[in-house]
Amino acid sequence: MRRVFLVLTVALAWAGSTARADELTSKEVAAGRKVYVAKCAKCHKFYEPKSYHEADWGRWMEAMSRKSKLKTEQDKLLRRYLDEYRAGRIPKAR
Image (cartoon, rainbow, N blue to C red; front, side, top):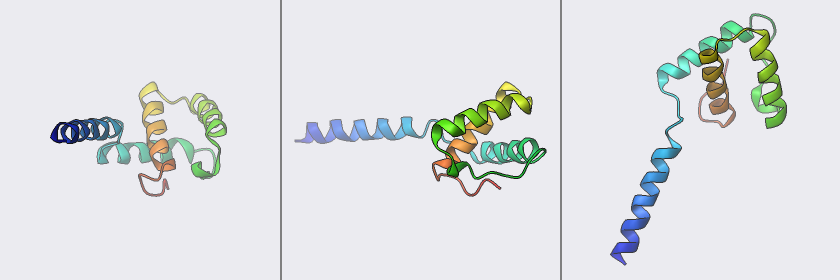
């Protein structure tokens, strides 16, 4: 019984640590929000990312990333930021 408990505890701890590996730090959240405001609001109003289906949002992100000439790192950060926002793990993206 102890062995099962130990195995389950280790498995849950490992799963929890890997699930958090992609979470943004507070600095990354601030930087992601800054890119969102600087690059997206430059040309149009803010759109609610949660209003789009995953596939539609992905297509828009791809097109807008190219159009706004995001650098690779900016694109990655913005996508992570908006993915976290869409998942409800960070406050409103505005």
